[in-house]
Length: 584
Image 1: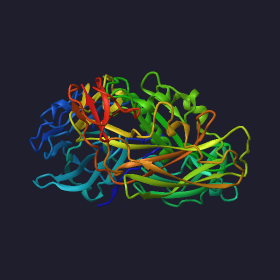
Image 2: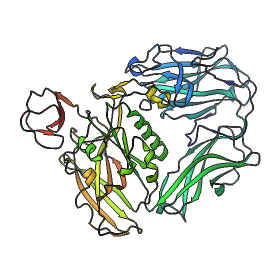
Image 3: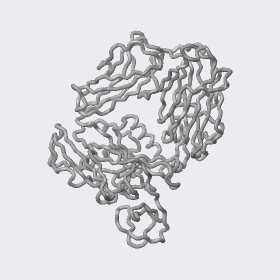
Image 4: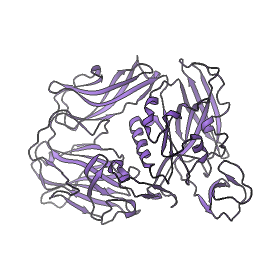
């Protein structure tokens, strides 16, 4: 049985390049006003019912339902957030179909809430038989659509039933769209572009950046074609003729793209053949500067913030667009994860708020203001070369800072190394963790279905900034940098080393699961010149935040600014023996 697992694409799920004619007997699942057509059956195989508190909509007892998701209307949905230990088994069964020669099963799938990824199988049963045969198994891990295909050649001439079975172990919801059984026609490709957006000068070869992408033929067999890179209408690079390219076949291509230093290069991936001319498959850009550029994105958020899910979606889109070039730091305000000192230094006066590389003019509720600061020359680089644990409760970091030959030494502009620690905080903490959600429009994707008050079992707070025991309202190395970390005047084409001790963040017993985000700060403006991130260990969870009655007095109580509290504390968050405590 030949199978194809679909690839992610930059532009849409697949680009149709020629008009397609209907194949004999082809089938397309069409849902009207949330109702499945006659002949389609849905079944709750396991009998498990989704947890109603996890959904504003679609928590039903009959398995699959239909609804809207993102820009797609009338898609197939399988709600699957069960009690721990229960397994969702929901079946969506297509009508009995006679399979013609050359037909494929095709569809798009996604995980509605990728914090809880989705698993499912594609199964087939011949007419007159009881046993279902598994054709393929899939795991959706992203809330963007991905195209999949399965070849049905072995069932040519036979009548069969096909079913999609969501077999989810504590997932959230599976969405499927554009389900069809037909013979692929025309020219249609899907692209997974693996090329980074940012290059360092030493990654070029004779002024050429190496692009890498995978193209999957989701249309008819192609007799032969040429794959190319274009800048506008100008062909920059191309392959030899590919020869025959069969339906369902994926091929990897690597082409060199001319890129000038400190200039953005927009390009298109194209296909060209005698029968259909040159057509665009995907678009992207490459930007080369002296060192590879990283994008530090500060995000202000809070559990109580109704509008903050929109910023979460915006951050997901940034990561989808720029990959690991994005380094996120989420700083909470006025909740159990609050980092009030860092939030004060960010100067975010409302949330959600986002800022790129600490450039004040980029601040906004979403990344709309980032555009003018994405592609900028980067003449400095920082790498963390070593992380070692002290015998006590500190970690020692060693970094190398480099300047390029184009770096301009200055007697008035100085730089320092700064850093912040972050941690992914989600699931199984305690029932004081929650997230607010006001969105009731399907364009907000998962938040259209998530409840208005998302309890801790559904929460996800990635890259949350952690309180440093050395930070105060007056001094904060996350924003001022470490005094003496770099010489007052730096030289071009030079390399500098710096080591520093990192104390345990407040409320933690170890560094497991903590991430070090280190960067170079221009001290006069506070702008991040370049950054890096390194994980310091596997996740082992955060200490429980205790709640105490404020009538009880404890020894060694400190406020979040690190100042010892004398006498009875007021209501609020304090540090007691290295633990975060709420007095009420």
